[in-house]
Figure (spheres, one colour):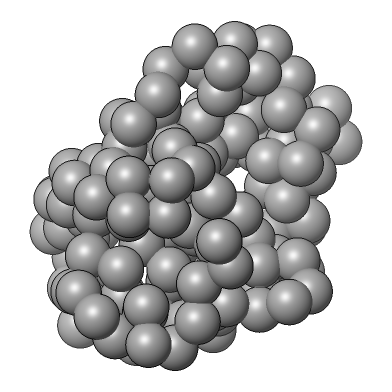
Length: 166
């Protein structure tokens, strides 16, 4: 089943799990959701401290477990391509820990999409063995961890000051 606008609006869990509609994209819904999340990140992050935003992300993770599980059951596919809330929460975590410059954020978004698509271990194991909303949310959280690790390695190898690079 390919969800449509009626499905999106039929339950709040569907609206969340489908990334406010970005999951309905016919072209790369995960990328569409990641780009939407990047676009709205400053609106969500600006008014609060890093600690408050991190706590907010933890609550969004657990809300995502519920919303993605319910939506996956309604679609008949645990991790349907249209379920993109996991990409959104994960990229918000990456952006929180990435220097606030366009270049660093673009690199972070690109790396995140790479790891989310390629799914190196243990992401592939999680994707195939952990079903339901928790598995959906966890695999993208691991892709976020890989992204942050590579960013840290880049900073270390090249001796970059990530806060000064534009």
